[in-house]
Amino acid sequence: LSRSTMMSIIVLASLCAMSRSPVIMMAKGTGVARDVTLNRQARQNYELLEEYEAGISLVGTEVKSCRAGKINLRDGYCQIKDGECWLRNVHIARHQFSGTFFQHDETRSRRLLLNKREIRKLDAAVQQKGLTIVPVKAYFNCDNRLKLQIALARGKNVADKRDTIKQRDTDREVKRQ
Image (cartoon, rainbow, N blue to C red):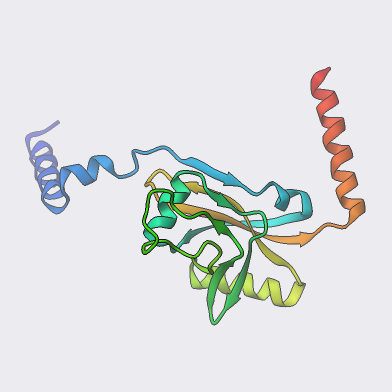
């Protein structure tokens, strides 16, 4: 490398070091994504059409309980109200080691963090096509933030559920042989 190229690299590196602390630069994105819970009932009862990733607004004891895996998505659904997406009926257990004053309500409505464009798209699909929005999976991403995978879903009838079970069984037998 030429001398001028080396000097520009050194200047850029020093500017980056001044704008961010070295600890943040090393820690950001170094974690591993970790699943907290899956909603197996959603895949069984619904045909999942489109999936989205949403952040979720929680209080401190809820985050601690989620880290311990004390979250249940089975009966949950999402509702769009006043241009915001809300997660309803999801049970996050009380934190074991916190006092009663700091505890949260276990099944309270929680706000989902989505772009306005995504919220409008979901709202249009729910209003026009009669679809529903269900939570599929909760996980901590590599930045250690709790994310929720939600999906636009169409309910299955009994015959569709039987077809899915038959297909799964035949796939399992083919893999064995």
